[in-house]
Image (cartoon, rainbow, N blue to C red; front, side, top):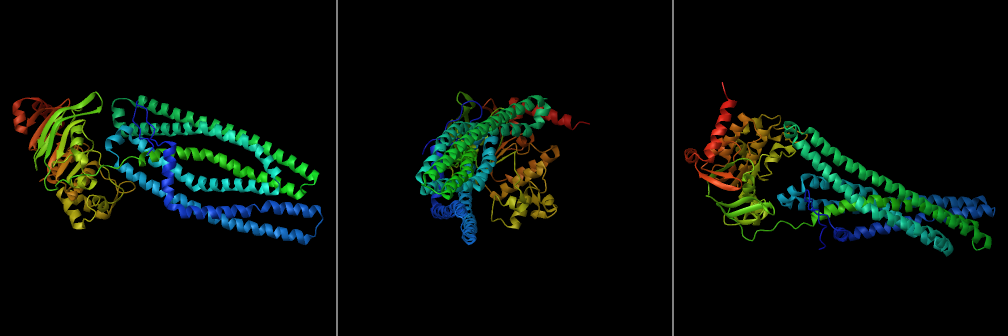
Amino acid sequence: MTPSRAQPSDGPVLLPVATPARTRAAMAELLRPQRTLALAAFAVMVGSTAVGLLVQPLLGRIVDLAADRASVDAITVTAALLVAVAVAQGVTAGCGLSLVSRLGETTLARLRERFVERALGLPLERVEKAGAGDLTARVTADVSLIAEAVRGALPELARSLLTIVLTLAAMALLDWRFLLAALLAVPVQAATARWYVARAVPLYAEQRTAGSALQQQLLDTVAGSSTVRAFRLEREHAERVAERSRSVVALRMRGVRLVLGFYSRLHIAEYIGLAAVLVTGYWLVREGSASIGTATAAALYFHSLFAPVNAALVLLDDAQSATASLARLVGVTDQPPPPQAARPVGTGRAEVAVRALSHAYRAGHPVLHDIDLTIRHGERVALVGASGAGKTTLARLVAGIQPPTSGTVLVGGVPPTELSPVAARRTVALITQETHVFAGPLADDLRLAKPDATDGELRAALDRVDALAWAEALPDGLATVVGDGGHRLSGDRTQALALARLVLADPPLVILDEATAEAGSAGARALEKAVARAVDGRTALIVAHRLSQAATADRVVVMDRGRIVETGTHDELRAAEGPYATLWRAWSDTRDADTGP
């Protein structure tokens, strides 16, 4: 397999982009199952184009009949043939374009499916390094651009190329000298196409990259708007957005200037070719080698090439842009699927063993150092520490989101990164503060965790996390449409929904990464009770945003600067007067101030 082009080392590590050779190979792979449809579309389009080429000789025939003062009946018969040709061409052209469109849409659908499959299988760390904007731009802007090309540019380009080839062949049948005269325009057109493509390919690649960077900046600014306002960073973020916007505008203007130069060169080619054909026709008629009607047909043939040649060359604009987008999609579809587990993990027990664990997101910048931790089956362990202590990183490594730089993580005796997707879903569940509500009925959202769950099981899961009352109070109960375009759920209800999914999935190991952080104080207390009920009987690793969760855990693990500095029960650590006791006093004082007289 041809490797994808490497990305720059500075800034976000964007997802790979396929090389031109690999992009062509990927398209051949997608089209291979559609060979029969492709051949049928090609045959019908050839027939339609060939029928349409009868118009110019018939018009030349009318010119000859008029010059020879033929009868009106002879002209009428020729005119009737023109009508028949127009009808036949319209019918066959419609059938041909329909087949081409079906071929394009089927291929696009297969590309979309492959892209989504690979995108969902990408390691989360890989997506985070690239930034959400890169993947979002590919799945939205790039897919839309390719779809537009498939629906508009592809059928038109196919028809234009066929028309050009068959029209030149028809001119040769009239007289080979007409073909030579027409070909005088080809060098200018070829030079124009080469000049354009050499500049358009890198330009459109830059435009796609700049668009991804702008989208990422907008996502970061909007998602972190509360933080931006809190630190008075509005002007700085606005300047960043403006800078990236200016970059996009500058690239767009370069594209406009490129297209203007492209058109001006095409017009020169048209004038050269038409002048050559007219001079050749004049000379052949004068020498008696061709009739006026034949010269007229040749001139009409070349004039009829204006539209398809211009369309084919202009469609290079769409083709280059679509090719750049296609390379970005193929760069993702070529990513290897997640590895399958060689050994299944038992779903009944889920002890966690972490040994000599160290991890660095960038070489030379470790965030975890020599972590040793054992979590027994059914034990509830709270992970606490200051921001940046490494709690979330440790939780992600235990969840199998990414492999550690060194050391081992075992869940039930198996590294979690080696679990198959099915085994991983049955073994471990990770719930963060960024829980998503999928658009659709609430019941369908719950059944994501267990597709065959009955209504009774859904209600039992909601009841276990104290969410059944408000769920049944929704306008249509469990059939209420939630998410985008539907009933909006508050932060604590969204987290409760995630906990209900957890109950339905029933994994033996649960990892909660500040799962109650988005709720208000009252909502957080209710969520903490729901968390306790949801994880009851399971092995649980809880990154505790609120120390009240640590107080009820079986064991507390305190982290500082990527190391475990304390471990024990809540009471033991308070009595030890170490880092945990300091955190507890600071947290308790804040709670007292919040609930003062």
